[in-house]
Length: 335
Image (cartoon, rainbow, N blue to C red; front, side):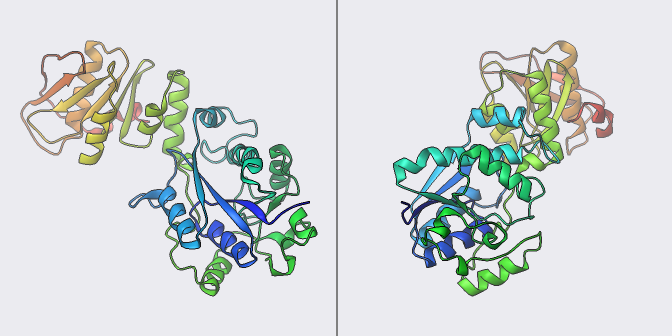
């Protein structure tokens, strides 16, 4: 026999927020679960998806657990059984991954079904009818995933059949238009949704290229390497050497803080320009090229550009660049 307890996937976006509110209005006792990763692109100028999800949970007085997608998830990104989307996004396998994690939590939380904010046909990979059915089967949650916004497009789930959820109060949203969600938000009094559709950097072509380069050239990558793919300008000098240039003062500081003991930092000395992190075993040609790239991306005009190279273990002689080449000179190296 089922109970009135459920786990709700809460991204912090509008759809999952509305789904949670609808179930609260039906008296369902919920624990929210939010999955986060370095590739979340929700409200990047504020606190991000995690804090938005916590804010929603607090407003609704729903307990929340935050789960970071670990390296087991990144291995799925690298080789997803059901393929990538437009970038390097493994949307189908990502959904299966999250739901399997939730399924493992259900006995501990006493939950008997799962709530999501999915809308049929909204996302091209994971929210088509055939992929929704596939995800249900492979997650082991067939018949136990309730989608309040689109429920009327599917056969009744177990909580509906057993009278725990009133099917007549569920909806039939579908497609990519968001007007019905906005109208429902106004009706339910949901006002603050800075991330209406969520966001994932894995769909970004630039991030996809950087990750594919990382997987190809650095099989022993770590969490820090993944974080670095989301910032700066990246240049692959040769198979064993990569340079990452900061674009802002904030990125310069972050790159400096993320540098490992075996990695090298290049810093402009007599001009304004990007701090650069070099990864790999550098030779003199690499050092020269990195210094030239830094000069090319400087904001100043100097007769000689002086660059410092150092690591946690070693300091090198200053490098001098006499000619500032156009940035386009290095386009073929850029990721």
